[in-house]
Length: 448
Ligand code: P5A
Image 1 (cartoon, rainbow, N blue to C red):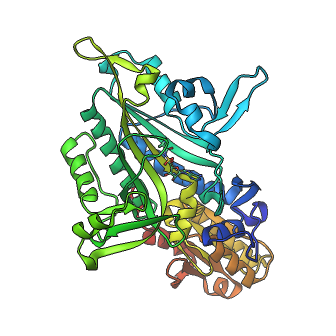
Image 2 (image 1 turned 90 degrees about the vertical axis):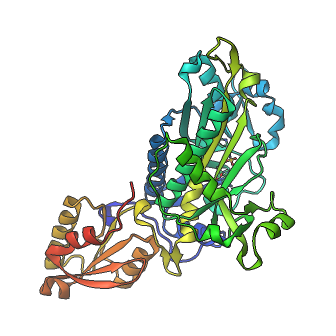
Image 3 (image 1 turned 135 degrees about the vertical axis):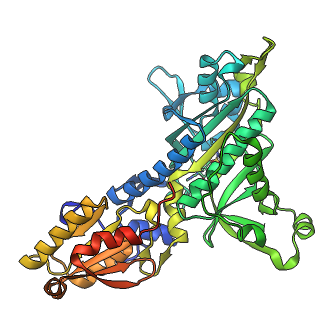
């Protein structure tokens, strides 16, 4: 992509409405634009990141055997009356009436709708287990939308829903999602700590939130240092092996970790020796729930069990804050000059900077490099604009692509490019013809 033909409305100065670093950088890097309180347009650069995150989430869901669907954003109030949540949900639900005066709503979540889909399509225990998920916009009329897309009113969520014949099988479905979440966040370069959590309006009695430590997080968290020091890289697991899957969950839940809602000081002190007691703030990037028959009973989602007896199915629901993750990643990966994207979610792999746009030799060298890197499978944003070098460097640092390849007349004369690693700041002089190979050899493996 040539910058001269792209739409990247970057800002030089800090927008005053942005209180936290991710919001500031997202606005300055031209990733989003606010349309109303808590409602944003995703501009080209922001959308690229959102799609990358969405794809990692999708791949890890699919790996567990979950199946993608797409439910609408607008729902009818009927099913919500049956579950009893229509009134319970209160002002956070955006209620709409259509031209026939039918009560509709913009979905804040989809437990009711998916349970009804399951009910209509399933008769026998032989049709189970099944886990259906979608990645869809939600609306919650938050009292205090803030921090940009971090606490939005309209936001993108991955929500999965598992259905099993009995409570024991449902635990395995829950555990699979738990492990998939560890892998998902690890692939984005994040350490998202699972913590025992409150279930709020979703319900049930087993629930974990996944939190990324950040000073700007909205939750207060308390945890064991040993948990923090565990190996958080994405490991392989056979999802069909119940013992292995539950073993991983046990490893990550046996150490104390709780959000302020669930925190009990005496318990923390009993379980964790003083020097290992850590506390801080965290951003909730996922939340999983196991609630048994809470929705299947009122909505009549029953199957015939092996004895021919009708039984309600056992369920859980599993949410990832896809749009919130964009902000959470920036909160945990930036410096004073801008964003530092982990390679797996970067909007482009490389920024190519032409320091003398309009100079024939430099333009030609850049064009050759641009083509070579493209042929090597790299996504390149080519700054071919006729701007000052200083502005080009700071814009490239701000948008945080993992690599910068800098080409000026002097380098062209020597046949050399300057390659800069955004994260470490390291610079290398690389022979022009070897740049693509250099980037390939030095890029972190994507753990897909
Ligand atoms: C689980 C899936 C649920 O809604 N029903 C379907 C369950 N859980 S949740 O915890 O309420 O939300 C799941 C994740 O969505 C993100 N999230 C938000 N992101 C941005 N702005 C918001 N206002 C917002 N509300 C929730 C969080 O990451 C949360 O963990």
